Image 1: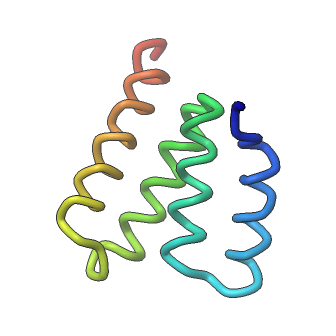
Image 2 (image 1 turned 180 degrees about the vertical axis):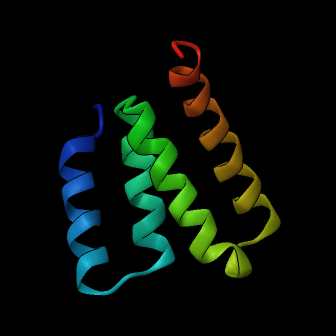
Length: 79
């Protein structure tokens, strides 16, 4: 069945507030992405990459950058 992205977002935000981590930040970005919240996902991936890039594998960084770009395409097309 479909994942409850709104509930996941809430849980990731609570986890990140309690103790910031790359996993929680990525979860926030991924949940926003899956809910097609373009501006929020773009911002969340930007924050995730800005803070955690030194600790990310090349594959993880590349995937986050691709998702960030994909969501930016969603809102820059209307500008």
